[in-house]
Image (cartoon, rainbow, N blue to C red):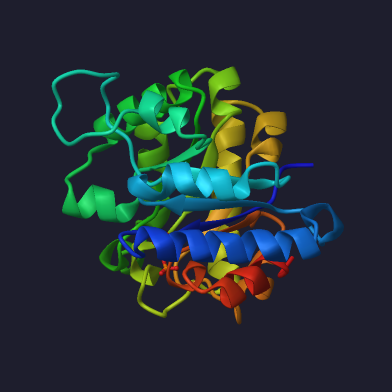
Length: 257
Ligand code: PGA
């Protein structure tokens, strides 16, 4: 059985004390509702700003199934790269995951597939689980190119990994037109793309690897629509932006399987 995950992407929001309050509320929920006892037995990951990592790692310490991750890392291991944060530094905070290739990184910071392949490599080398984001913009979907776009992102970003390395990857399909817009992909659109992603993983690696890969949906997923999205065979959870900033909404999503 592949892992189900509900992940929150806090983006550039929340002061440190607000992040500690939010993570404490989520931990409180998990203590009262052990993740093992919930349908889907999901894991929970909070992708926080760098400055929150150490504190949130302390808040979640010892709570089974709850993890913290960074939203980005640099391509290089260490050195004279003023202002950047390495995967090794992230790992040293207690974080276990890192987002790679979120569409905001691709579009605002010009991160190319080649850069993202490098970030994936450095994350794996430093024992972080990369959550690799992919997804098409609206024009690409309207032109019927969405499958090709996602295929190319996965080929260039991930499909050079060995089978063993690839087995450590989580994928997040996030159609860019759905991120922060309130327009969610329909359950059918999400299922169709997730099944396609699984199919190309099977073609590149094998059916077992494809079957074991966790594929999350992201893009205006919220407390109201999470259940119908997660009900699809190939949707293994969500990467939640806006709705991850409110403990009540995020905890409702955790219970949505
Ligand atoms: P959203 O963001 O849930 O606010 O649409 C999702 C994401 O960017 O990961």
